[in-house]
Image (cartoon, rainbow, N blue to C red; front, side, top):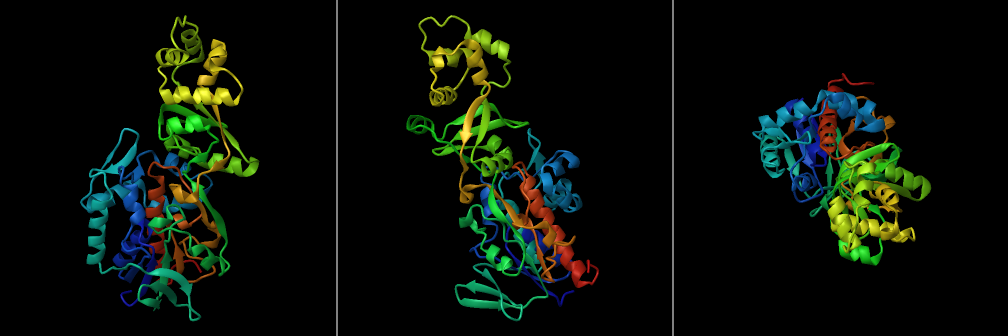
Length: 411
């Protein structure tokens, strides 16, 4: 196996994990990346605390991948959240489970983990070649890279593509691989925003006053699903963890109908009868905003949201009877008219269609070419599920390459 030369294209979690598996298998591995340094999006993900994976039981964990769950299950089961935690521990970066069940490294940041990982890869003989942008294959099937020193052609025995999706393109994942693979007849589901914000037609008054303000302790609902968490008012709409959890359903509804209505419960732990009772108390000389602030403990941005929605409905908030006002407080309708741009989404949906890959993550149309990570057609909510599947599919692709080179993979 030491005579086998493997190229891994993409130095994110999926690519580096594939490289590690291949190096452990005895292959000579070179990782190519278009950026000046490795794993830039991974580092950005760790700026606010690196959420590696989640501690929930595996059946519930796998269900987070929705329709892709049956396809991803073998890879995530083979390299499970516990395997990922053990892997981190072996790198000298122990993990802990937060109050929400999310798993973080004790150091919280991505940089110590990445440094330890790159040191280990270097010790395994893995070479990393930055500033190598993959542009396809030549007529002999050799890889072509654009570099600062001109075109570089690479001959390999197998290739792992781990180029990411198309979110945060300035960090390296720009979807530039799509036309290259499409030209080879590979079916690719369109890349779309996932875990993204949405566009709302706020009034200038509301936008200017509340842009950047968080809505805390709320519940968001769409269809049959309801999610607790937080959201943030943006200049053009709304985003945040609770919004991201519903983003797939909201995105599809907007694609189908041109809009979707998200409902916000501002006081989800207070039942309707209690809200009515509080709102029925004498107001005295208090302003209506003070009534809402004191009686319901609503923040200024929550009160502003109520006023914004009432205004769009042609209603005066202060004139609503207590029962109707109570109903509005826990079901504030927000009309979403579009998704925020793919470039600002946390991740992307779409990618290489599942049917294009065999069970070892090799492209059926391109013998010896494997794929892993976010460039595949799956999506997941935030909470550690994105990184877990990226790591796991990287492991699966690396193992797939070794099987194929040994002649033990699918025919």
